[in-house]
Length: 295
Image (cartoon, rainbow, N blue to C red; front, side, top):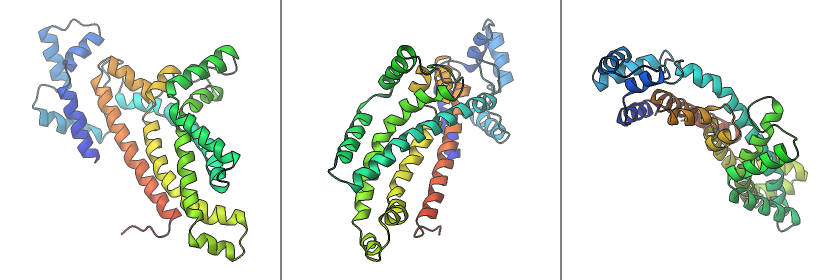
């Protein structure tokens, strides 16, 4: 999969308009004459056949060499790794907010269907999936940062800077998990083995925690892996609004600067993240469900 994505990423870079050598010269403030462009193309290895360029680029990947950014002149791998921790922190905060809202409301809605708790959960889920992330971000900035001056609204200055962007991202995901947890748990609670566990005299909390939730959590875990991969790729809108120094904002800046080598490295890194997260989710499925085994 990674090899296929590397072919696509490399091919798309050659299909994009503009000469990388000319873009690099303009970024350095050098007049892009024909001689300067040809010299730069030779220096970058762009004067050979495309398949040879791909082979050389692929060989550098094994040394973690993603090339040099046209804009900053720094190694792309170094740039990506310097921003990855900020995105990972924001991803963790967002998922904690999403699960912190979804777990109690989803479980409560399933245990007490038709109650006020169920109506609260359904209302919160509807509000979550209907509210655009950029709109919620602006509301949080206005009330949390400008009006009440409780929290910082831009940059990454400390733990308090994480609160608003985490809520903006996490609340948008919470509604999906509320509905999924409620539906899965309601289905599990009607199974015969749950009735058998209760008939044996097990306490209600033990039946819910040990038997019902363990099985009801499997669909949510699969979705959690998808959302984690997407969040680790950087939430472009939220990171841009809050000036969060993560991968999403870095990728947007590279697109506007036509820094194709950065975009290429970003695509490969995100592909690697998706593969690793999906592998981790599959392994967790095996731990939670003993019926799943590797063949």
